[in-house]
Length: 350
Image (cartoon, rainbow, N blue to C red):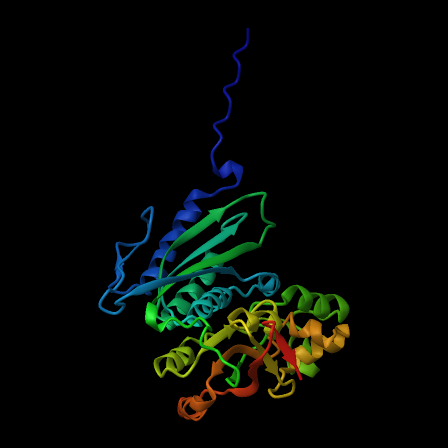
């Protein structure tokens, strides 16, 4: 009777997961992450959990503030252009803004990067953006997860998400409860879409208009892909200036949902926001998107930031001080409306 052939030894690589390649990428990640460390980071990258010491000299009565988010379908443009260096920066800045508007100082950041097959160069590009963002915002990239999931993601694509933790002293929290009728609303310019509204923008640019990502688009004076990939701006430093000077009663990061849905999140009962359309320059990309799809004003205002990435409420009596501070810091801003009495916490456009 013939010998039965011995079955071939199957490895994890045969299933599509290259552990060796992953290990090499992780070594590079460690190097990039360690450049963001400060004296409060305990241990290095590679433990089962990241360790961070809360500085109780700096925070006497600390409240931890956290946020988690992703880059969304902006990643689709990154895949098309092979441009991966800025999406990590987008993610960090988005998460930083979310906690900074509550007065929090960013402490540390963790990321989740998942793909079907790990590409070490793409991974390094993404993580370099994360590290750049963390360093610029003064927080440490102390850990995360890099997952290979063959068969789950299309070749050449990945998903990216992040989690941030910050701290603020209880008596310095900014939660909007101090907002009152008469407060002045000032808007700070965005750089573009930031990380929201990309499903509609991609449809209008690439399906309706038929643009190629590398095509120059005259109405926006830029290439289609480059305009859509403009980095999500961090407002941390201007927020810190306003908070330190005690000049703001509430701030809203204008993300998905636009001004229409984000500003009401900080309004106390009995107030509404009155926003004056035309009081700030709308970026050309938004005007062009509206024209391409004949999109209604209401739809534009609740899908895109429309050129305003951050709104701060300033008591009328403190406005001159706030203006002087911002002018001295060379921070651009526009007076875009006021807080008024209202039974429903909503935005009214005039």
